[in-house]
Length: 225
Image (cartoon, rainbow, N blue to C red; front, side, top):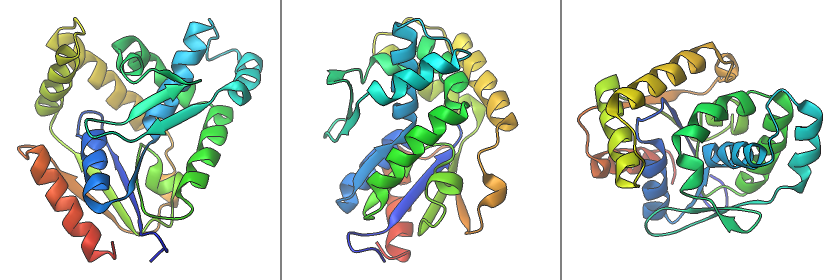
């Protein structure tokens, strides 16, 4: 066990509930929450605002050292600050969601953000979530979770989340976006072949958010939290 607690790495498909669950698990355990996906979204937003395409590697290489991404905790969800500006809502817009993969796939972006993430987690006591979190960022995490859920439920959850935030989008478009993400993710190398410690799959279909949190907190206590 690390001095300030264990590292909990939560991976999973889009719409399975990673972010909300990870945040609440962190609150329950008194741990920090590290939303790695928000960091990639912040980079995507910053590049989009400047008109820097994912193919413009030299411009991205120059941009990355200039960005300050700060993840702040909060009772109703953490805030994401990009150069001191709260972009928590903007990074979740469908436009950014559709673009984020093209930036997140780039080795220079991943290297920069993974180094930051590993520094944040080196003392333990952290709940980190993202697609490569257990295989690449924290391969020695004491607890690794893979969250899954069936497509219909993921579409319903994501559509409700977006419309609650005032985003005008149909359920059909949400389904199309999720299916595209699923295909893209299936083709990406998230370092799964290098993951040697056991990953526990949690199927959240039909589970309430509270049920998801209770289940993972119980697993965390079993693994030394």
